[in-house]
Amino acid sequence: MTPERTAPKSALARRLPLIIIAAVALVGAFTLREHLSFDALAENREALIALRDQHYLLAVLGFVAIYVVIVAFSLPGATIATLTGGFLFGVFPGALFNITAATIGATLIFLAVRWGLGERLVARMDASQGRIHQIREAIRENELSMLFLIRLVPAVPFFVANILPALVGVSPLRFIVTTFLGIIPGGVVYTWVGAGLGEVFARGETPNLGIIFEPHILGPILGLCALAALPIVIKAIRGGKS
Image (cartoon, rainbow, N blue to C red; front, side):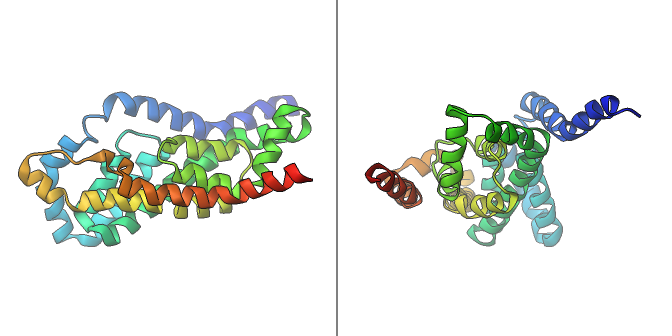
């Protein structure tokens, strides 16, 4: 088989996981929204509690697997999954299950993007000159701080924070570490909200998912953001003085 024929096939093989993720995400956006909702959780809460009480390990493994799939394929329902983790397993170990599953799912989509697009795109950035190369170098110089920032800032969509690092050549180990640590604050907050869903269900209400933007919650998270940004600011000041 000639190199000309193998090259397109190898390129397709690299991009196949990404194509599958995009296709599943598109289908899921239209077909799963009602099934991965707060109303669905409310309707099935008794069955879920019964499963947890009778088969705890199976419930944990099933929950983590479903959460991983939701994140890896960017399906709707990640927030509901986090609430469910708190509702079924409490703040702890619910938060640990949520954060671990989210990190695994994020890593899978990161690797798919990195394998399919990232390595070639990074090579082009490194070979190019001008503004694009300067942006890549700026990210590389402040990589850890930038990775923590995009995880800590609540306004950054989770799937964006999964894809962007792959497109600029972040190493898998750094991605995994910063993802796991960076999503702890938000993960704990929403798991805590989920742990109180029993009372919410009893009142026939819906949880306050905007709680993360309330001052007593957002303040400490912004403090962590400022701490993560501090090395970038220091480098910028030192660069300006040189």
